[in-house]
Length: 356
Image (cartoon, rainbow, N blue to C red; front, side, top):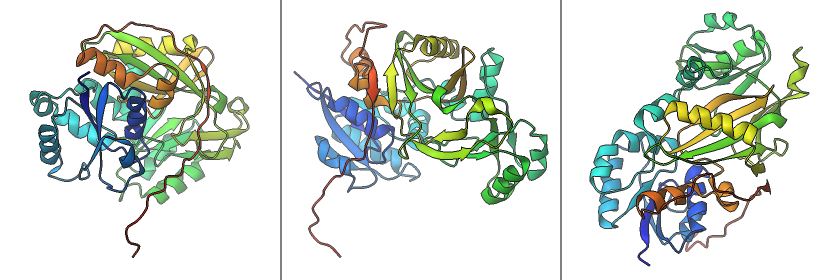
């Protein structure tokens, strides 16, 4: 069998690049996997067929170096492993595709919308889907308009993995966070979003379409938000909203829990993905209560649970590669296993030739 040569970037950051790598390693007989990272000593370097070092996406020579590697290594498909690279791959999409390289990313319009959390919230409301209340703020004087505590404070653009996300339960805490984050100075602005539901109602949901917009399948993971590995923030609920539970919790982005169809959740997310015109991988962060999915973030990329989904039989990167570069017929809504998947840390020993 003539293996397809797949370049996966940012495999060492513990994000979705590492997840895509784990998923494709489960189908290693189909692929020759080239891994890339800015850190030449990343633990994942030993698990790929070939490793190359790329500069950070912020480097002005990043695309030139990337395309040179793709040419010399005869790469068939390129999969990004972090959001800064997603932004660049989308920007230089035509250049990459003109080089004959398959790029399994969603449409430019959807990527650009989802990378802006306020635009995502606004779009969901315009389409008639439930979404948390929100306000984009650029100065402390705007904070007095918030009267729907508790709230989640997050960057309005970018992020991922719940980076720089906080909880405020009253105006005093919110003002303190604004000062801490340097609102109006170093931080030009952030998004204030209503905290909704309970930790037991939180899901991460994958809805997969091919790049022609044809629906393939969907899957959900109901998060277990109790261990330190999966929780970024957990504080006692001091508000009068007892329906939110005893504790207010924000996930770390390292998801684990019950995985399966959850049709009451996935069918609503599929409808949203269809209405958004999704053409590729799409991942929803949401809470399910009162019979409705309430979306608080959409990630237009492979998920931090990609390998977990592959473990139960829904291998999203493999499906897109088989459909678009191997030209296979892909069954839709196929069945997969269901169960509980828990995560733990894994140690990797790398011998050093010399210790300074």
